[in-house]
Amino acid sequence: MLNITPIDAFQDNYIWLVRNPNGQKALVVDPGEARPVLQALENENLTLAALFITHHHADHTGGIRQLLTQYPTVKIFGPATERIFGLTHPVKEGDNITVSGIDAQFQVFDVSGHTAGHVAYYGENALFCGDTLFSVGCGRLFEGTPAQMHASLSKIAALPDETQVFCAHEYTLDNIAFAKWVEPNNSVLLQREAEVHALHDQDKPTVPSNLSIERLINPFLRFAEPSVIQAAETFAGRSLTTEAEVFATIRHWKDSQFD
Image (cartoon, rainbow, N blue to C red; front, side, top):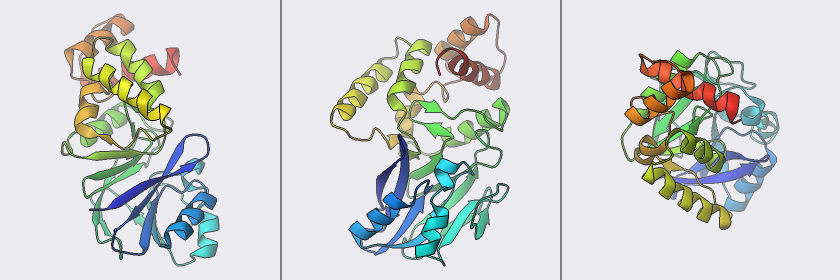
């Protein structure tokens, strides 16, 4: 069982620190800042073994250069089709990665949509998905198409129920507010809202989230559900014939009237 802890960065980013409880090496996911990563490594007496990068945005890569001054031989894994500073191991769909000292294998998924080459890493029931899937939400489509993002989210939705979703931002409460527009009578969603408020009151992260719960409350994974289809068609003012159309409509709804 891996030990996975969040490192706070910027206003609402999470950098993930991954270690084997019996080891002294660490894997870090999406180091947008170096300072908090270096502090966490020092506090835990850990050595940086590898970096996993999900996509090229600065709040996910900005700490790489400084980390390389402290760990010049660190392995840096990232999407082969995006320009990532310091990248040593370009990865693509279907690749398998084993990091020495972590003793866990991770599979790479192409989850394009937020960016053109966005990837996710899955292993030990943990999914590091960057800005593709959030708790009760998904990332904006900056470079990809709705069809690409729909395919990416469908791929994630097919993972096992026990998958823990380690996304890169603390957006859960805002995402719930929009999800309630789509499904105001979703009792599981309302229960999750109460849990998230309680976590906020205790200044605790609301992630990781559980994929089995996300399938019940996240409108961007529920594009096949009659209640979500009906809400999307009401917003669009027309019939929608495919799941991808439903997803695109829900994403446009959030972009245009909520964000």
